Image 1: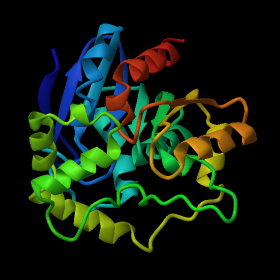
Image 2: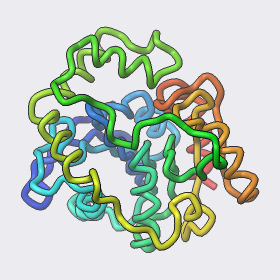
Image 3: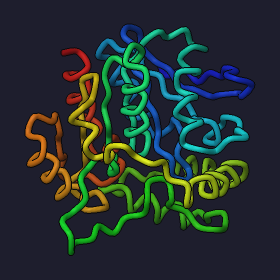
Image 4: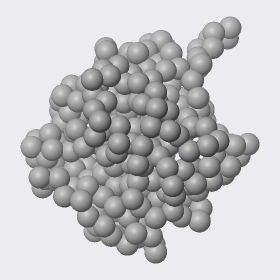
Length: 274
C-alpha cells in the first residue's frame, strides 16, 4: 500500500509517497504547473511489487510541500541529496520525468557516488535539436501555464495535450491535478518562471551530448506522440550515439508513465535490476 508521509528537510515541510522494500528508487516529477508526486501513483505499487522501495516526493513549490524562497532549478537539484539525507538514503536510482530527467542526470555527474542509475522519461532537453530549417513547436520544460490561475477546463485541456489516452482523465484525476495547480502552487509557478526566464545556465557541453557521457547507467524513454518532435529527435540521438539505451513507446504523449504504465515499469525494472 502506498503511504503518504511528511518530513522536514532544510526547514521545509515535504510530502512524499512511499511503497515497497529493497533498493531505493527516487521518482522525480516534472516542473509544469500542477506536477506533484501524484504523477507516479500509477507506477509506485508496480515498482514495489517488483522488489524496489519506490519513493516520490513533492518538490519544494509543488503539491503539498512548502514553497521555498529559492525557485531556481539549481535549488531543486541541490534539494534532492538533502531529501535523501533526511531519509538516510546513501545511494538511490533516480527516475526523472520531463525537466527532472535532466536534473537526475546532472546529479549523477555531480554525485556519482550517490546515484546508482538514471532513467530520463520524456526529457526533451536531452535530445538533439532538429536540423536547421525544421522547428519543434514545444514550450520550454516547465513553462506550460498562463498568467492567471487555471480553470478546471484549462487543467483538462492541459492533461488532454499531454496524454494519448484521454480515458485516463477521470474526475478524480482532474480534481487532483486542479488542486495542485492553484493557490500557493500557482504562486510558486509564477516565481519559477520569473527565476528562469533570461537566466539559463551556461553549458560547457550541450545538454543533448551529455547522455553519451553519463557516469552511471542511463535509460531514456519517450512517447512517440510527445510534443517537440520527440520521436524524430530520438532517432537523431540514436544516429549520433547508437549505444544509447533509448526507447520510444507508441501511443504515448508526454505523460509516458500514464499512457504506457505497464511498459514503463517493465522497461524500468529490467534496467534497474540488471
